[in-house]
Structures are given as structure tokens and as C-alpha cells.
Length: 74
Length: 74
Image: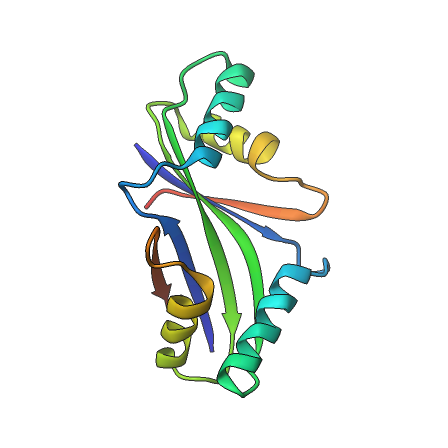
């Protein structure tokens, strides 16, 4: 079964990578692009249960001090 | 308006980051987890049109030799 895990910085956390991309985009398009936040995307193809995938997302794919994760069954 | 851009390695491209995570997960769970592929996730909050976002995804957020991108309007 296929699962998608999205990991993104918590709202209150500064996202310097997103800020950098925003600046590059502003220079390229010569206008204010708005806000960009960057996260990670994982595609997992597994025979294991959703519980295992949640556990994987929580313990290995994300850092729960600064990031939120979401498991999606597409 | 909010857009989501997903950038992931093309199917034919090796994904060493995914392979590394797979190994860590196997050691942690003591079983074969299956296949993991890693991509990038961008959340863009903008007043600009979807065309601009597609352009941004194509020219700045992804490398079209090795990556595919997808723009989603959530």
C-alpha cells in the first residue's frame, strides 16, 4: 500500500530555506510572490500497517520539536 | 491563494536519500519497510496566478532533468 508523509516546519518556527527561495523568486519575477514554506515529502510503498507508517513518520522522518507531520493515504 | 508544490525525483532516478532512510527504518523496526522515496514540499501563499506558480515550480523549485513537479490547489 502507498502512503504519503508530509513533514513541515511548525507555524511558529522560522523557515530560512523558504525565506531564501522567496527572495530568489522575487528577484526572478520582479514582484512580491508572497510566502513560501518548505517541507519534506515522502512516498512510502509498504506492506506494513498505517500504524507503522505513523510511527516511522513520528520517530524517523520528523523532529516533533520543530516539525509537524501528516500521513496521507492517497 | 494557497498552492502546494510537490517536487520528487523521476522514477528512473536513483534516490540515495530514500535508500538511506529505508535502511534506518529497517534497523529500527527490524523488518523490511518497503520503498521510500523523498521529495520536497512547498506551501506557497500568494496573490499571483497559477501560471506564475507553475513557472516558479518549473524554473526555481525543481530541476527538470531529474525531478518531476506537481502544482496542487488544496
